[in-house]
Length: 501
Image (cartoon, rainbow, N blue to C red; front, side):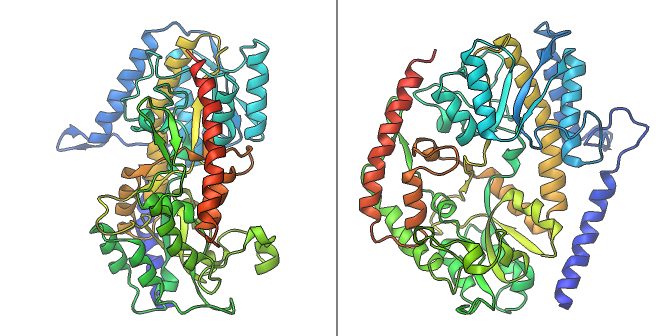
């Protein structure tokens, strides 16, 4: 207990200057998320970046006539929209507000945001509007699976790689957009700081410091050193977790709070989606041996309920019935589990609970793996798309580029620097871990082709998830059957893409 109190006090001492620095002067009509201090009489690197962004946005504004125009962006209720058209003191909301305020002033436009209840409503409204020839929407927010992909299937969004003012080589766009998201060289989705999910959906691991302190063999220093030295691997994770005794009655401590075998697959460097010489996505017809080898390891962990509180959904089990809990990760929050497989946004979310944790990258498959891979699941990955019937594609593209640039200035500062690397951490080592995680983010669009509806994985991803968590005895046959379905889905998608300019 004493160790926990000391950790919390140290955390508070670290966070206090950050929170104090975030307070704004109420007399300043245009507060910034970054200061204007100088170092040895010269502007800081951050100030120089901001100045370059400001100059770039001003150039964009000078290149197009937008005065008096309105701009409508549509999407579900989320932090991509400011809570109010003014400052509220909320770091997240204010960052988006500052972005929208600057765009409005620089371009002379008015905003008409249209907020929906969810992805399905967003998709339906955009498809219906474009199909009827309406031009109400200029930019669409939504995650890739439930919004962007259905819009592509419906043929109602434009290619973004051919738009002159969208500069995909800029730092505010995901650098691997062309490689990961392009289909036969055509790109329809945009991702980067323009969507707040870019800071929330990347996979990582959290370890419970209170639980770790119960076992002298488990130390923060060793965990962080393993990660820094590139030796944080699946086998090391299992070795350290084994210091926690098995928990057959469910009344003790679990080694793992939850199941995330899919995140582990990609952290080992595996990919499901391949691309042929024409840039068309494809899926291996037979189960890759690397995937089978990994499932042999993960099934042993996640199907063992003395290590992980899991429930076999194929048998009709659910966590409420089996464990009498109704929230994910209860065990980690209640200091009854050592490790939690998480997204980086969970580090922000968990600060509201009485749990002290450290952050680690997802483990490598082996120490010979050249780098870490931090998977960003397209179910959570935010993206933006442009409807075909926007009033002016050139104007929309220009404003979208400006929004992305100013998102690098405001949203990256708010989410990455202030919330993730500031308020969400309990030790300075976690800041280093976050830098590792965001430098190694990877994507795989297999969910797009898997064939599910907007509310669930398709059969291929269900098979992969199930056979790496519960029972892989039929993995090879199930994979082959669902790979054929997935390849058929890819062919249907390619017909849509081929018809696009």
